[in-house]
Image 1 (tube, rainbow, N blue to C red):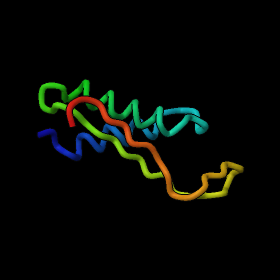
Image 2 (image 1 turned 180 degrees about the horizontal axis):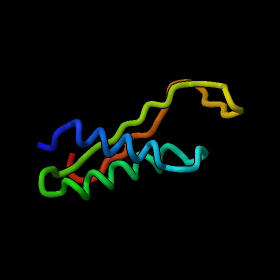
Image 3 (image 1 turned 90 degrees about the horizontal axis):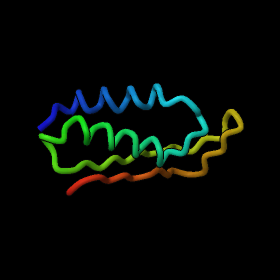
Image 4 (image 1 turned 120 degrees about the vertical axis):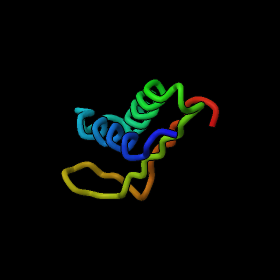
Length: 76
């Protein structure tokens, strides 16, 4: 199995460098899932990414309630 810390480092790097703050969370979850799946294809059969988005009303970006996407690729 891949080391969790390595997976986390890749996911955090994608989150920190995704660019546009208005990007849909679904696209970010997909990017994380695809990147990890491609990198660890010989070690895993599938991966599921769940992003939890907390509610906030700052900076004119209204995020109502706890929500977020789940992205699955491969045989999970």
